[in-house]
Image 1 (cartoon, rainbow, N blue to C red):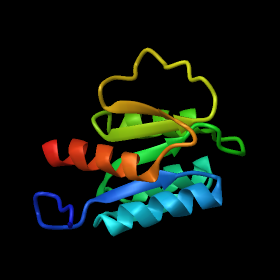
Image 2 (cartoon, rainbow, N blue to C red):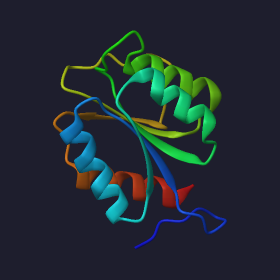
Image 3 (cartoon, rainbow, N blue to C red):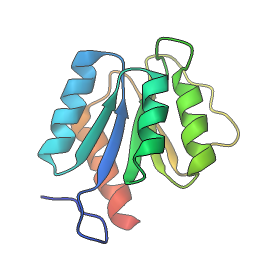
Length: 128
């Protein structure tokens, strides 16, 4: 199956995850289902990738990123530019959701199932 946007282009997902094995598993699953994937292992890279790739249709963001720019910072930066972008945020910790998160932001506990994340994105993106 190939998931394409309204123009026939492949749908692009940004995966932001510092754990390499977790990131590789999710990227492989998304690509197997026809998504194009951009990867970042830290928050600063994620924000730079997002801002330089307007074709991104969704993002999966780990909240517990290393460095000065954590996952919440990434989510806030993305939402300030594109508040309607489908986002899945993940954490191994109990998350306190900011009040400005809405139906475009979903939460998954880690460890998450890459197949489940893929199914969620397919469902969400096929409706938009």
